[in-house]
Length: 482
Image (cartoon, rainbow, N blue to C red; front, side, top):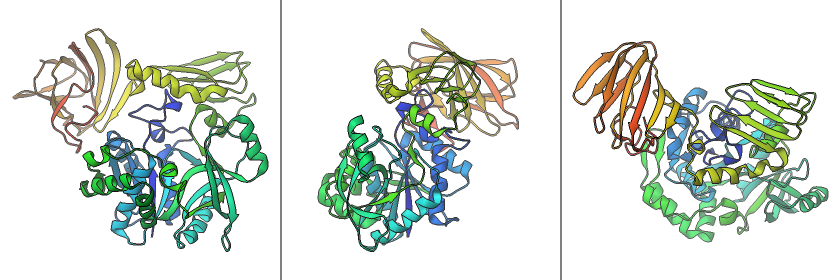
């Protein structure tokens, strides 16, 4: 039985400012109207042949802080899957081991199909055919990776040097070696030789065989994953891995931990219009270009501009007389870079993170299960937010150590609890919440409510929230607030 495992971790820093820690690239609609995660789920459903049993065979792995957006993405697609939540990121080898353990609990002969969520595949039929070939190899206890037939010299991907052809299998080879991202000259040599494939990061193998090889070549990872799985908390389709064991697990990729060492590795050649959406320049390559080679998304006006990627999320973006430039605007940040150096955005984001900039973590508008909040102004000792609560929803019962809050209702009728007193506030009415007071905001009506929140205090971070009760199953000590 086939179990797709969608890897939905990572921060996607090279696609900042659209991709942020709390809303990374896999949850963004970067190509078309669907998010990359939704496209990956579509691929998984296609590999399984359509309708799924309860919870399905599909597994989605991501960081615990992304539990709510991941569940919202699943709900919006209408498909069933199980969600594996990591307490910390530990690269791909451990999370694939967890996926293997989860699959084996349902089927002793489980085959694991590993699909990163941040990929684009244009030809699903070609991928399905390659999966069929890999399934035959898996019957021989092979660990298969999918090697993309290169379309050009590319320095942004790792490579696989193919070995001998495997008898009786179409487009299947042994693996001679894995190669890191090459220089431009080496990439040109690899492309010209025809003996190399791009390393896609997609795999298919028997779940039990992967665990055997992991125990052989990376026993510390295998031991930690077994313990974290035993300590997992399972709530329906949501699986929260055991924290202590997973935090103690070494961090390593599946390539380094297993594939570069095992004698069971095989590579299936694949040409399917594949791309790893890893940088703005890659995204420019994937989009439809205008007459001047430009990709223009949102409210954009350009004059004598060539071969640029121009994207506006909240206001007019105007450009004159430039070429080979990436310009991405969001409500609180603007990125300008040359297309050729768009891979270096990650280094820029690392600098912003070290400086403690909030733009690395979240957007100006932040989704929550009850609605959203939007930061309007922030200065020394104060912050102003707009809060929108959907009908029938409510925030957690909480208090703060460092800040007091004023709430002014601008739309709808809010049910407000402050300590032992509950009251209804209509448009124009307000309330004050002292430091340390237990409080909650609820919408018991059938129209949205909106209010302006003014925070006053010596510390205004989102982690200055102590949750006492929550309606959405979130950890009371979770990384996100509200």
